[in-house]
Length: 44
Image (cartoon, rainbow, N blue to C red; front, side, top):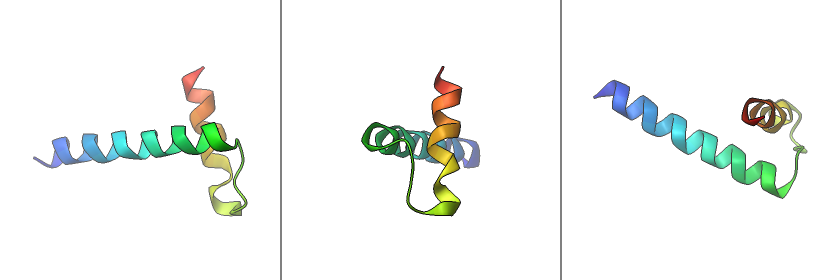
């Protein structure tokens, strides 16, 4: 059950990053700024 939950949460997190990346490749929040770029690099 925990593995299924973890996969679901990971999928939601990745979808959120994809949506954020589609809006803008950077974030005004310094801590979060690297996340969209890291996600974009994994999609290439």
